[in-house]
Amino acid sequence: MLDNHAPRSVCIEDIEIGMTSSRRKRITDRDIALFAEVSTDRNPVHLDEAYAQETMFQGRIAHGMLTASLISAVIGEDLPGHGTVYLSQSLRFMAPVRPGDDLTAQVKVTAIDHARRRVTLETLCSVGNTVVLKGEALVMAPSAKLD
Image (cartoon, rainbow, N blue to C red; front, side, top):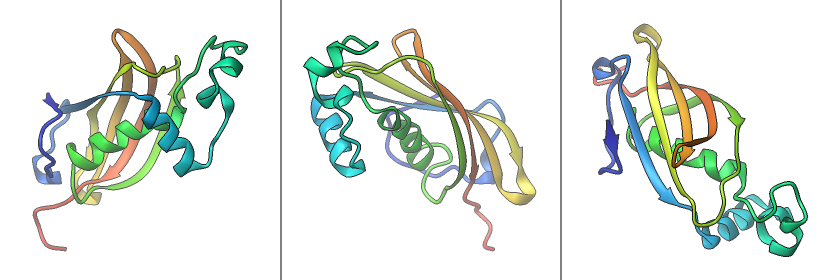
């Protein structure tokens, strides 16, 4: 398994079923504020502690798409890496991510279509032993061969 290493590319010719890669990131108040600014999603459950205390979460939580964006980092930087084209992503949010949580995103190769350069990846985010997000991505991997 690859983990928080230098960016790379794994060409379709070198990808194997079962390959995994992951990245870890501590989610900070700054991350949440910047994501709110970029996305324009200023839901107070993310930004206002007093408001968030009155919700089912009983405190502020990170945006779900901020959590999911760490999957994009694994795919775009590690496996398959640079040159990958994201085609689709399903997401199922299982538990909240809070400021200060150490988030781990992992992808695992589950299927490969060499002819079309398509790779199916199981995607998972966790905080400790708690799965907070799971899904599946379909990507087009880079190729060592010229098109």
